[in-house]
Length: 295
Image 1 (cartoon, rainbow, N blue to C red):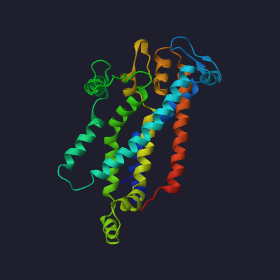
Image 2 (cartoon, one colour; image 1 turned 45 degrees about the vertical axis):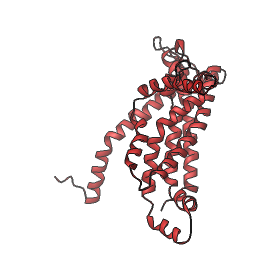
Image 3 (cartoon, rainbow, N blue to C red; image 1 turned 120 degrees about the vertical axis):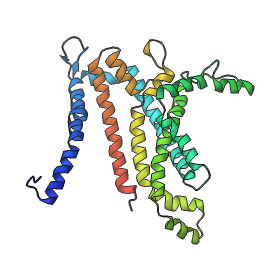
Image 4 (cartoon, one colour; image 1 turned 30 degrees about the horizontal axis):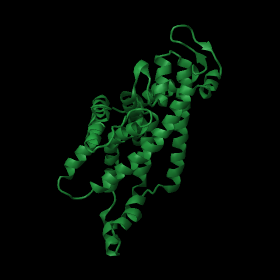
């Protein structure tokens, strides 16, 4: 069928046609939702009565809300611990499993399993591991003659949930780094070996510079996931009446919206979190322009 387009124009036509569903979802789903949330942040609305204009009072109230300040601070602390741990451990695993060793496929599968396992099921298992009275960790400590630890109490909960979230994310990061590692030509390593470079020198002078695109991508995705973290944290640290020993930003947004029906407050918190993510992305893209090596 002739649409009256030149060959290049025909290619553009099919390209836009194939992109149309994604563009519709982007405009009405992502951008539309963001604009609706921004507009709602200037109103007081309880889902029952008509919205009332509130101006910037919802944003001013954020700094005066100790619960949100705690949740926002916890999000920053969690991200500062979670992102470097995921990136570094995933990279080390990928380097170790990028070798011709027996059973390497089995090891790759084992490390990737947490990424495809239900968060609810995983949280139940980790609850049994962290349990104060009958948890596996405390039983091990008692066997060694040590006192049991309340792993999910306020003092230790942050470290405990970071460990669980890192465990669940390193498999995906490992796959991304493996893809980057396999794209590096073997000739570079052979030439370096002939010049007397050992494995450590090859890693820092060949592998690390050439895998910076994968490091950039994995750091960006991991940070976004950290800012959005909710499932493991809530299921491991939830207490009575919907509280948590480690409240985070997304958890605070959820509580304000669907527990307290303060949609304006929840929208203001969501916009602030979106601005934080946008700021981090801007920093990451600046870093990419200056330090990421593309062959």
